[in-house]
Image (cartoon, rainbow, N blue to C red; front, side, top):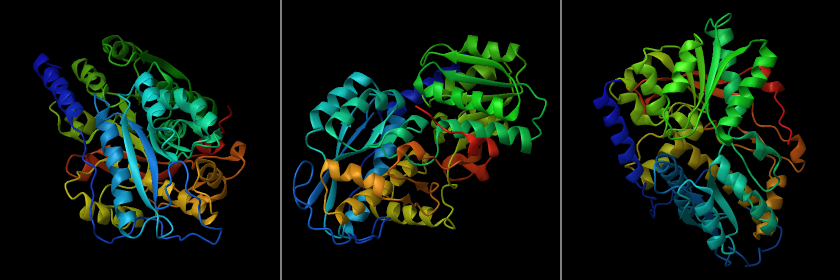
Length: 428
């Protein structure tokens, strides 16, 4: 890539990092997603994070730094859901929800400090963003009996009784993407490779690819790992020297321009499949990188295309956006944040029905809630009291990059599943 184009990409990332997504509010009467009302179980007693009228939930997410391009729209999605729900009366028709948001800076130490600041004031955590950050807080959550929604798709969360993951897992996103390439896109006999960050997030994608290799009987020719923020020249050269036809990328959005930029500069053109956190809508319109992604890349994610109102959950979300945050641009992270709040709502409705909105009562409600439903905005997710048997939905959606559609992603294979994904079982 020409130096001036790379400079422009880096400048754009810096601009993204300064954007703090506003959390919408409003006073209209449209409901949030769950219309369930609390069953008789006694009136919840006020206590930590619940004053008798308002439920306070924590959010630990990057609101500053480069990772805020993910954290801010996620949190905006949380907030829009609760704005709509509160306008209709709140949980059980009478308990409003308030979010206490703290900046993690996408680093474990500030995240731990943020947790310590608010953990005694909240009934649960609506969102904790980041695989390594979630890992660093697991023990604290356990010690204090607090439920939390991990804004990360690692399969590790399946076996944690006080966590409520949604969507599918990073491992399954990888498995389905390579299965699709081999069985639907003429990839049999081609050279399969992967690139991944050298951290816990990268480990999850690599684990999925390694499992797929055993199930689908192929060899991973090259596995290139890199430190986030480091130069990617050697990694791309490693893939190019390996004559890779397909590359699965467990890449975070802050590194995508440099990874793809180096591929453009090297004239390296495999079929890419990028894990969903690699994507930011603006990438599809960037000089050099945008056209390259349009021609050579899929994004492995979940759910429907933004704006597809034939999907009930999407129609509901867009209605809430229209009322409470009409300036919200199409964004996959916003949609995930909205779905995450929808999951918490269903859990809180169950806790309220049980007559217990304490941290312990909310955690217990995760095991009682059964199947969480999202109107196909993201796949339904069946929980249960035995976390050892909990399995993520084995479906994912492969998108092509198309700047002409809202959000820049066009669904190519919706709710794709494979026998390999169905066979994947996470064990701690």
